[in-house]
Length: 318
Image (cartoon, rainbow, N blue to C red):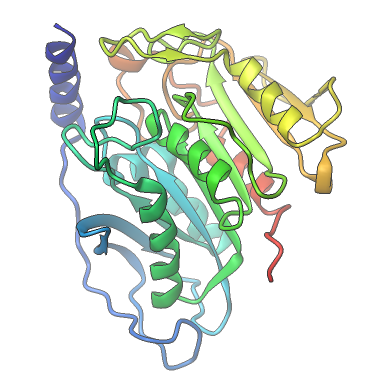
């Protein structure tokens, strides 16, 4: 019965959003930074062989991109049963990239429905190593484009948020900050990042799939999740922050926020509670239908707040 439930959800997502991906030819061979490097502005679909598998991803290069100037990179991971094109639409990262001048990459998970090996699902022997894939993907994009490797940031929705969490824990030397929206966080083992990790989280109190207060999922998977407020507090502890968070002011009535400060290396942990919000990405991007995921809050732009947070941090270089 659980598998039938997921098939219905997958069918609805495909029917509503489709899976078409506009492909634009692009070539940026060899050296990443230099006046002679070639590239194509806009969206393009690419592939990368990782651990013997051909993995796909979508990359967006803004019109302001300068191949002679190291450019920040944002990775945004789709949720379970979603895909890169949908994540692009939900998050509106492209519009922000145009305004702020950074490159965005939307990687694709594996399997059917598409998913990430975040530790949420039972994995067979020889499971996909998505940590390795994402690490290699960063390297590949930095080969193709002029990327500032001190300013690489990762974020995701739902299962993609959970995978971003895992990557931040295991590969803190690769990303400068981590963000999660309606994250399906889980226990894959101890989170012991090699350096303090700036974190920004968003979660709706009425999320029907990943409950705000934790417990069993509201979907047919039967997964069990931690309390999201407790998850934020745990990140505060990992980063050696002061135990009592500060209140974030100047927010709309539909949003509450707290900030953990006094942390190691001057990082912070921010947590935005979306009152009445569903399993959705807050903002004015393409909404997930309410009958699937609940209400999408449009009083804030999660991506814009995330970017403002990311810009405060860069990763120390060797």
